[in-house]
Length: 450
Ligand SMILES: Cc1cc2nc3c(=O)[nH]c(=O)nc-3n(C[C@H](O)[C@H](O)[C@H](O)COP(=O)(O)OP(=O)(O)OC[C@H]3O[C@@H](n4cnc5c(N)ncnc54)[C@H](O)[C@@H]3O)c2cc1C
Image 1 (cartoon, rainbow, N blue to C red):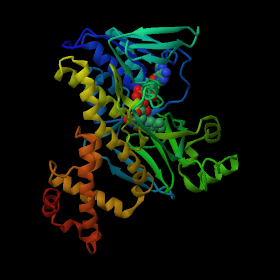
Image 2 (image 1 turned 180 degrees about the vertical axis):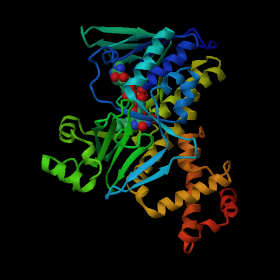
Image 3 (image 1 turned 30 degrees about the vertical axis):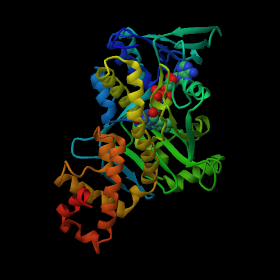
């Protein structure tokens, strides 16, 4: 296993977003990649439903897409969202930019992106086997055993390296876990989510401003909407599972309509199929998975398989794509010595993925609650000014996570320091009227001196 950065036979489990992208990286390096995917080929007619589900793509994701040469194609699918558009209970709108002029996150169709990556992977020479459900692994011999969902036969895929990119409920991870000395935690939040749809208007236009991520923040819960290329929006309703204003409380047509009428009055007329969507679409749960080690022999888990996070920072896929970028760098650094690559990769990456898992939970509180708060908006304005004056020294946490490649753990540590400084600034008397006269130089110095 030493010495060669190419020429390996690599078996990957899971042709989702991360697996498909990583297969391109590895195949382009001169390895032979085999992707084993349990679902049917989503590119074949009838395989995907009519619903459009989208994701926010940002800097870390783009970096990997650029490096693999697919960014230009993805750009055609992507709609820039320059900031949050908040909808208050009276329907009043407030726009809050995500970053500086010219910075945006991008709404991309999950299925469209996955299909594009699979096409590219196959064009590079990756072999994708569909309907193959990985059931077990022989770590010593580096063999994946998968059951064909159609004819129920089991096939063995033997390689030099195995990579599990089989998502939050990874079987590869489960198999490593069974082999012992494996730390694992999973925690569900009290909230679940349900997808709803805002179709285009009768004049086939977007029903809302397309270049924004729309949020209806309501304290314990929220609704968000991201634009699609077909001019619809996919909405996601985040509600607690239990209690007042929860999925368990909203069971009847009347309860749902009353809830939307009183809570999201401006969204209600835009969702004509609300009841159909509500009853037809599943209520899904949201989990954080942390585990370690990610390596067993020559087998590695990566993407959601090793670090599934809640979606509130829009970083699940982006962090998985960053995994691919970093793994590729390590293949260069360690000149194809996979033992070293795998050991080093997990050691370097783990603190960062733990950090983004915690930041994602933290951002849930911010999105559903604080974004509607006057003090929070003032804080953001002051931080924006600090960033304008000292662009290298004061980068707001959201920007470090979304628009930079600073490690997540470092971003979190700097963010905590900034938060403490801003807590102090916000206690200044009459801050609302006097913030423009603050000594910004003194504030920024505190980042390094205290
Ligand atoms: C509601 C919601 C919104 C989100 N929004 C964002 C966002 O805006 N931005 C963002 O960056 N991230 C977002 N995410 C996170 C993102 O969806 C995931 O991080 C990303 O899909 C992880 O990719 P993956 O390839 O690791 O796993 P997956 O996308 O889950 O792919 C896993 C693949 O493995 C296959 N598989 C599973 N088991 C087996 C098996 N036994 N054998 C063979 N194949 C198998 C599956 O069929 C699938 O194709 C969101 C997640 C949710 C739930």
